[in-house]
Image (cartoon, rainbow, N blue to C red; front, side, top):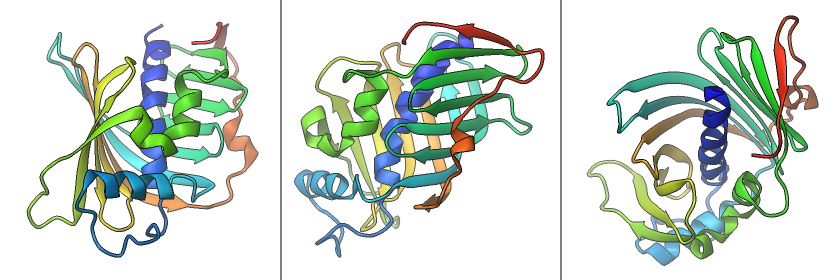
Amino acid sequence: MEIYKKFTALLLGLALAAPVGWAANPAPGAASAPVTVTEVIKGVEQTYGSATSIRAEFMQVDRSKATGMEVRQRGNIALERPQKMRVEMGFPVTSVYVSDGKTMWAYSVKDKQVYETPEMGGGSGVDILLQDLGRLGELFHVTLLPEKPGKPVITVQLVPKQPGAFKSIQLTITKQKYVLQDLVLVNQMDDVTEMNFTAVRMNQDIPDSEFSFVAPPGVKVVKTGAM
């Protein structure tokens, strides 16, 4: 059941990451680095819908407030608008998360078990995040954090205007092109997830087969209701 719980948090985090990282080209008027919150919000919102797909590699670090434990994992992600996603974590792969826009799967290799659930709709959860982060200023209180000396990046703190899974989200993005480098998520229990993205590739054709999942022989399929 643990992989099922982590599935929602992972989806939320990657959904938040995707729009900023999809900025293949500078937003109109973004020749120089934004210096105000308004300019940052405008730049992110302008670039949100500019790409159809993304591939990237990432390093994820999870820190538990209650136990003090830290878990590090590497992974690969493929996203395609509006709601298709594939995430493989671990080398060799230990878990796989897939959405074809209608069904979501969370597969644990070790447990030989996959959770299958209907994709969420009706304006909730992941559906909102994948579709509507172009409304950054509407959905979040945005604070521009001090620049890091010698680094051509912008860091912003996001606090959801409506209560949700996370207390805050911190994004570090490159200047001009708004390409995501780092993402820090703090949930309601003060657990922290940090993600660093590399090898970002936009607008590539991704086969539909990557967004479907067939359980390997001997793997138990557990069908559940919507998250």
